[in-house]
Length: 74
Image: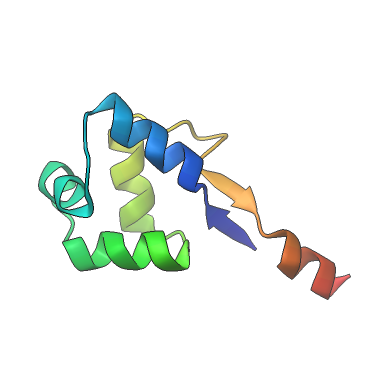
């Protein structure tokens, strides 16, 4: 399982001088609730991934492996 990288999201926010979930919502057109859920659960959804791509998130860093899920399945 893959999770959203909070480090990469913070990098993108800094690059665009976005300080809050409200700022993300304004810039991307997604709702505050969508961003709040994405940041809380870290589950990648197509709309969040597309918004991050438009903001310049690095494709090789936007997702990270969930080590807990990997170790449980082994």
